[in-house]
Structure formats: structure tokens, C-alpha cells
Amino acid sequence: MESVTEEYPRIESKPTVLMLNPPPVYLLHKSQLSHHFDFINARDSPLPLHEFLAAGNAAGVTAMLTNNKTLITGDGILRHLPALRCIVNTSAGTEHIDLAECRRRGIAVANGGAVYSDNCADMAVGLLLDVLRKISAADRFVRSGVWEAKGEFPLGNRLDAIEAILP
Image 1: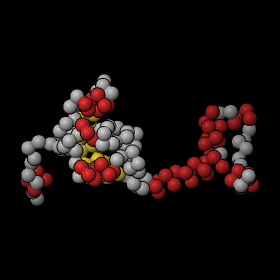
Image 2: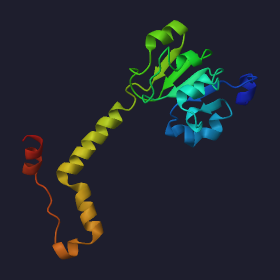
Image 3: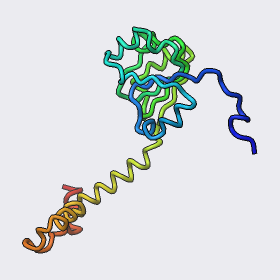
Image 4: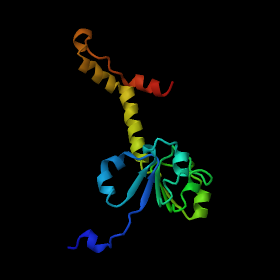
């Protein structure tokens, strides 16, 4: 079996990726990703973002990795990135990205969309059950050892849970 490097010709220079707010996955896979991309982390600079970009530090950037914490507009960030071809948003939504300007410049935009929706819903239901049934509070009560002095933990009952949901 041929190796990956034999199947795909090696690119002379790696694409340069500007990271505005690196996601946690970047830190986990930094060494592997660095073989394929050159990363510029704008947060590593002591300069404010607009000054960092205006100084030409990211002129050769072809891709940007961001989340919804930074406004990306034509007269803001985009004007300093003439080679930009792709924006990858690691959060849901694109309200912070000037999509019309990206379309005009031929910049592809991708985002996480609803990728975490099921997990978020599962967590919400789990936390609701935790609060209604006092699971975490009971755990803290037992682990603290005060149950020996105070007796049993007062568990909630079904009526309490219904009253909590329907006041």
C-alpha cells in the first residue's frame, strides 16, 4: 500500500491559516496540523487585531479559522486579507460574517451549523433532571460527610418536580 505522501504530491508551500480564536481541538492536534498548514495566531501578538492586520502580518493568509466572537466585515478584517479564500467558523451561525462581501470576493464560508444541537439538547435534559431530582446536591451532601450528623438527604418527589416545571 502506498503512503499518503506518494498518493498526493507534496505542495511546495503550506497554506497559511489565520486563527482569530483557536478552538480547543487546535491545541490537541497542533503538531499534526502544523505539518499541513502554517498558522498565524492573531492572539499571540501584543497588537490589537486591527493593528496586527494593518501591519501586513497576514497578507498571505488563504484561510481563516474563527468563531462568533469576532465581527468579519469588508471594511474591517477582510480588507487586510487579499489572498483569503476560505473562512471556517467553528460555532453555529454566520451573523458576524459579511456574507455578501465574502460572496463578492469569492471567499467560501463554512460553519459548525447544528452539529452540536443534539448534544446541547441532551445536556439540557440531563441538567434539568439533575436540578429537579437534586442529584448533584445529594452527591455533594454525601461526599462532604455531613450526612452522619444531619441524617438522610431529603430527596425530591414527583410532585415537587411537577410544581417546579408548572408553577
